[in-house]
Length: 189
Image (cartoon, rainbow, N blue to C red):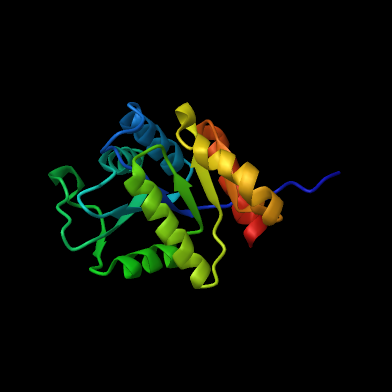
């Protein structure tokens, strides 16, 4: 009989999402769905807020579902009144913000968004690697939001970086996203 994989309890997930700029018209809805789903499963969410980009639908939905959320922000952040009670850590230096997220997170989740959210994810992921942490990344490829990155991973990463799929994965739905997060965190421990 095969051993049952233990589900990770209360993982800290750095979520990168943006509802500003060009991109998927369903971003706000996707953020709300993800926030609710992940919070109901006990995940603590860490969100980046910089340059006026705050994933309000994600934070609002996660908190409404009873979830714990922390915001790491630049010193220009202005939170809407609805988020006034959310714990916030203001860090002026961008690299220091990324390093703080890297210290907190067990895994990174990229939701469909703008270039700002992808840039934030990449900055935090490289900060983790520089600190010797190997946090997995799962990208929600809903509506083909990360199709270019998926192609890059298949064409460029796979031949040169053995086991890349144990670090970066793509999924098309939130339920599978949760499953992949659990598997990847367990494998990285």
